[in-house]
Image 1 (cartoon, rainbow, N blue to C red):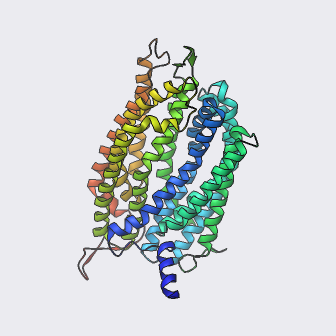
Image 2 (image 1 turned 120 degrees about the horizontal axis):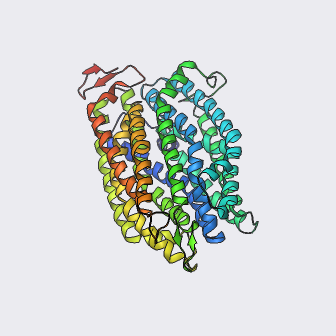
Image 3 (image 1 turned 180 degrees about the vertical axis):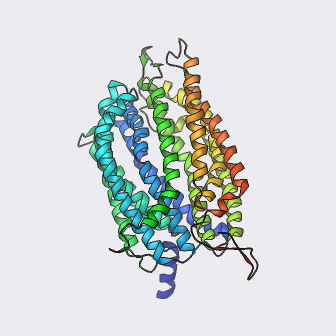
Length: 495
């Protein structure tokens, strides 16, 4: 009996070998806890927005939203390390190479520490100048600056949680990070209510609640990883950076980091457009903060709606990485079909639900008794009904992109993103907004900001599918392996 319980616990909380058994069951066993965990992680910022918006008003809510693109811009360093180490871990785990797996983990931890120090040292003094450059309204500048500086000061927690959870995902363990996140999300909400409410710390209180909760998440995940000695060794020898590992990690992760950096930079430029949109309040007075608050609520809902696609893509990456490491391209192809079918189904359901209940979701973030509430809700619903079409598009993009990322082929997606965002989306958004200025919208019609997103995401999706069809990603594996054809004893070399 004791042995059965131990075996069951290991199957739930241990590393998961995704190279055997039913591909669908393996991917869903990994994806469902990961999805719940991603929802919990997103609740950090969402709790901040809901509590700040309800307790402090639309100006405080707008300040949290205005700081988000800048925050994401600095955190691309974690994307670089996290993407690289997840791919390396999944492939080395699939190849049963414990030595290189351990050195990859140690190298990632050292690079993460360097990245967090960089963000803290440079992010804090640059917060105010960047906010000014994005034309943040003086009414919310103080709130936004305070929030950003605290988040940057606590970057170590967010950085290590993201990278350590990525390592655990590469090992196929998505259950333990889920339990950690559920616990610390509850803690974050409690601290939000305490700091923003009774202690009167305002927006800064929400930032401190997030920093404390994320630090605890990182600490618990680190302890978990250290104890997984049967799979990976974390000691003085393995945490010494190896030139080979640094090279591999940057080769795989840097394109994803650059891609995310470019996306974040484009969102900073778009945020300057958003900050300049004029909406007339209930009294007929021109306001710059109404649309920023509206956009904050919409993007918080949008982030939840995009989570299934991102989660199934992560599941597909780990599944592809392990099976490429084991030479099972036959299973990789099955995984793509499963990811695509599930992502499209879930995205369609979400599209319908948001189309129907979008206004109710926006009400969660605002004080509905405020005179400007109807304006924010009406405008938010209009934006949502444009943005929802991105969910279908991203279901396809994330499905094929996840497989290519799992194979270690991240460079093509970087170039596709550069062209779609820098070359097309940002200029198109600026053009649409500036050509639509009118007495009703002196700063331009905000619809153009989101229409440009749908168009450019669609073009990027088409380019991603075309590249995936070429099959070049199959030759990017880190380990020299053989491809199983699914027949006993029949293999062919792929790298």
